[in-house]
Image 1 (cartoon, rainbow, N blue to C red):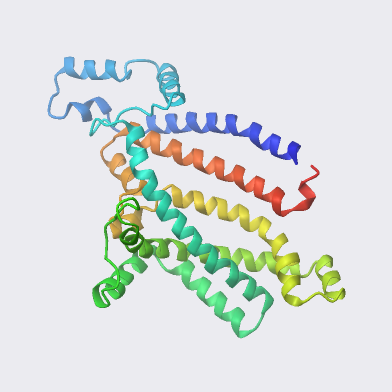
Image 2: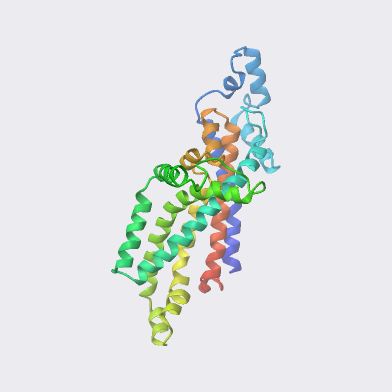
Length: 314
């Protein structure tokens, strides 16, 4: 166990270093001159030169990278060129919104997708199997923005149960906060639940055909115990990987869903930054998102060991 996790921990630092290089280099490929964007209507060569000097844009790319990564290691992601606010503060402001939305969506997806996948596998080729597959196919085929608009029309406009858009922080009013995020969370969780259902079904069908399941049944264990304790526990290993990746996708921001429901999260912020060529914000958000992906994969590896006893002696 220690050896397996030790290798994974050792891979984190070089992975993050490579990610930082890629983030910085890809930002250099973006069109436009940041100095011209910051100068606005001022096209005075002296002003442009001063801006480039302040932002180290007149230095070689290698020097720019080491200057940037040095600040990042100290917790400084730079300043937004458009609103002149630290990127760290912007990330800290938007991150709780995205965390709340992503967590709610992921919980909805797990509580819908995994039970449906188990039911579909156990009741293979029955009405319940066809129903679960139909719901999963509908979830995969339905665009998030369309489902969001339809929910607003039905739940908010016609029924008046929930507010159609906006966001209220949990610290201000937790009831209103849940009311403003439950619909976008369901929209995001719906698509992910369909993916989890398909993978859970496939993994469960494979697990139910294994010798240890037949042995458990031969010992006279109840079908419920065989399915939950023996089959599902082993089937969850690939599902954990998928879940970590999907959660990382949610944390990176769901642009269309956030736009439809006017949720001020990561997705909306990075789109605005790209359109305004606010490179420090783009770099900071992408770097934070990539770091979250790497850490979630590390968490998935730890869960592997907890779920699969064969890895504990590795």
